[in-house]
Amino acid sequence: MSDPTPQPRSLSLLSVVIPARNEEGCICSTVEHLHLELRLHNVPHEIIVVDDGSTDRTWELLIQIKAGLPELVPVKNEELHGFGRAVVRGFDHMKGDAVVIMMADESDDCRDVVRYWEELNKGWDCVFGSRFVKGGGTVDYPKIKLFINRIANFFLKTLFAIRLNDTTNAFKAYRVK
Image (tube, rainbow, N blue to C red; front, side, top):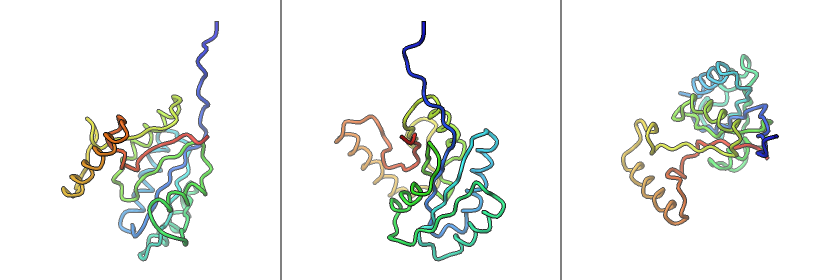
């Protein structure tokens, strides 16, 4: 007798979209650490960094890294700027059947990208992290921003009757349909 539960379609390529604006101080380490972590866990990947109107050396550094890292796809957003627009621009350039949105400043843990990939491969359509559960957290997060963030998340959770407690966190993963 066969199992009536459909098996999840196996994923072949993870696209990581990273919006970046004036991140010359950390973009190299973000990309290199992410690539290393994904390679160590045999995750087939591409890293799409969208330069969202940087006025520093972010773009120049991305081009330099690209020479030695074929998985890097630097994209310049020369249209209207903003976090959401940069994410959409990254989506426009991705080839993967799964995507993770990640911050450029290494505030998101590369090891969690691997965990997200593993969960997506179990059949989940999306995976959301939370800074506000056991094992989550923030480092050097401004107290006033944390306070406002917690109020906003409580409001959204209550208003929409959802269990998510960190809807404002962009660090999420999705299967591409």
